Image 1 (cartoon, rainbow, N blue to C red):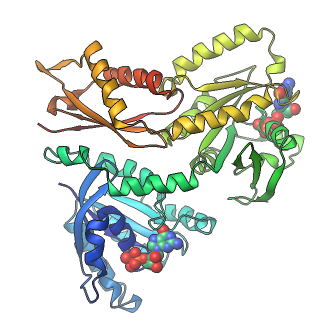
Image 2 (image 1 turned 60 degrees about the vertical axis):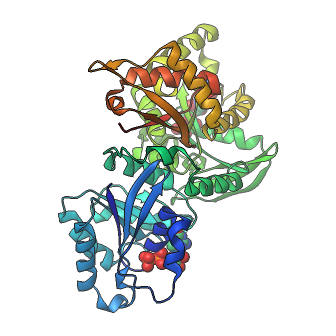
Image 3 (image 1 turned 90 degrees about the horizontal axis):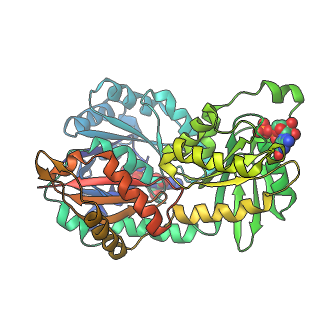
Length: 457
Ligand code: GDP
Ligand code: GDP
């Protein structure tokens, strides 16, 4: 089993993350007074992942004044004994000299290190998390250990690093529900349905601002415009039926001069930022030149981030033969955005307002699919039939056996397949066959689906 070391200066939230990972089983031990906290070890879990986790909390007793020597040493030792390092920083505090000390050691190590910006649950953390880039350890994963946010993203980053299969863990994996998973689900129930966070993205001049203005025009705003996540962005909240929609990072609300509009370039980093903070991403395209290279780039960013996606084809008023145009669009979408087969596509005109009313209901549809949970029994009933209809291929004359399947997480729907060793070579085409079937069976059209194949003997 692989060992993950949680590294970082005191008070960044290492123990909090450690407790999240080991669950209730070991949290108790940790609460014992007087326990030496030099090292805490436990069996860690994060959704479908299992690993050994070490918390190198030792410097606490000495406090900051014993730094930096002791901290360097602990970091060094912690990483020495682990396969992977999770380097936590406190995004609220930003990058401190102690963080830089640690980063320097980690940069020199040849072990994989994930940079984790913790305490990211509020806006106060945005600047610090962005600053984390400066540590030279790549892109930070934004989490809140205390609130259980961003752990899906963390799991996604960790998954490839833990890729070595564990033969024995299979049975109990499939058995009882994971404590952490259940906790994540509770939070989702609380925070999920009430307010949907929406980002409207697209190339310059496709009509994003026009669309935003149309949408706002028709809504009774609850709040806003409020200062948004970045300097020149604002966030707006309105009510639709019994739900709230928060339109985030809406630089488009700013009035721009004609010159500004003309010279505007696609800002990929701003787009990524919006996508990251959204549940649903609306990608606006121009009907007179749909599915251009940049449109696909943005779509793929949203898919890679695992967000729910809705495609708006704006300027529909300029289209001469709507029926033919729509048919062509669907065909091309199926081709070029195959990872989100069946993605919802809404033709509209921000200028005339036609079709704009259709947008909001489809957003919720995409959102619901994205956060859907398919019960394990249903999933396996379906799987048996799918396997019978079209059995997995032979690999080195041995058949791949898929035994069982369960939904490991939602947002986006992520499924774990439990299989025999041959499944290492499970072809992509077979996963595509399964995912196509699942989209139909469980109404998962247009959402990115993720699969994790776990195999033992
Ligand atoms: P360690 O010394 O690095 O192990 O840090 P702890 O896990 O003991 O956490 C230090 C403090 O940060 C505690 O008061 C935690 O409650 C708090 N903390 C941990 N994670 C988060 C978080 O995600 N958000 C916020 N706001 N506070 C956190
Ligand atoms: P943004 O850069 O994506 O925010 O795009 P804007 O909203 O600024 O629109 C760019 C240009 O397209 C402006 O000249 C708009 O008037 C025009 N435009 C926006 N929506 C439509 C539409 O539905 N139909 C037509 N014909 N023009 C539109």
